[in-house]
Structure formats: structure tokens, C-alpha cells
Length: 174
Image 1: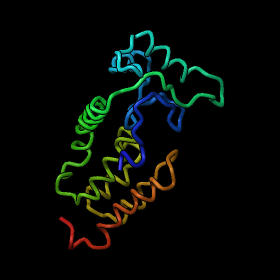
Image 2 (image 1 turned 45 degrees about the vertical axis):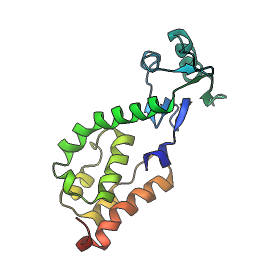
Image 3 (image 1 turned 60 degrees about the horizontal axis):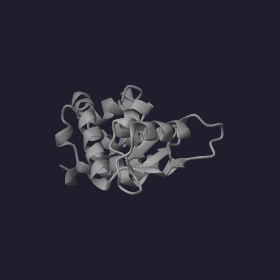
């Protein structure tokens, strides 16, 4: 689901909020953060910190509306994108376990919905009713409380559907 809704871009790009991003929705909040990533040039030669900083600034500091949505002179290799995604998921694991102590007992579709949400939001602080519903395994309420602002309508629908799957046939779920 992350690949479907975040995409997978080997070059830096602007997300829907104008943030410089790379790979599977990995935020590069500063040029220093971007410079820590192993970008390469089209020739697969490692990029310098200066080249990475220039690419980041080219996207971040442009007039509105932006004319440039991707900086295609620098790339991450597939294995680096995969590693970055794993690191991001590991970073959110603590949030998930702290928020949902019984996470591993939830149906896989509910876990998928929650991982998509935490990846997008970073935490569940603005979703107390969702957290309560999920921890009570009230999947129908969770489906109503999972709507986010600033994402595609389809992403919200997909998340709702994942929770609703469990409300429709709870006896078939783990």
C-alpha cells in the first residue's frame, strides 16, 4: 500500500505539501538530511554533498507555484531505496507498539491500514477516537475515524476498506 500511495521515486521530488522527498515517501526536511543519503549521478558515480545540496535547494526554494517538481540529476539505487524504507518503518515501529500494544494480534488488513497511516502521519496524536476504536478492535468505528486531510481520496478509501474488511467478517479474522 505504501508503494501504491507514496510511489517510489529514485530522484528528489516535491510531495503534495511541497516537501522535498525521495524513494517511498522519505522526507528530506533539510539539505543536510538529503546529503546523508547515497545519491549517485546518472553515471552511477557518487554525488558530492554540494551536488546534493544544490538539488535539494533547487526544489525547496523556488517560486510558487513550483516550476520544478523533480530533480532528476541525482538518483538513489533500488537497494538504497529499499534500505531507506526499512529504516523508516523501523523508526515508526516504536510508535506503533506504544500506541497499539496488541498490534500483532490485529488482522493483517488492519495492520496494513495502521502502517500506512503512521508512515503518512508520524503518530496518531490527532486521532484519539481511531486509537480507542482500534485498541477495542472496533473496526467499523476505526473505518470512520481514519480519514486524513491532505491525502488523496483514494488513499482514504483504501484505508477505510482495510478496516471495514474486519467489521464485515470478524469471525474470519485472526
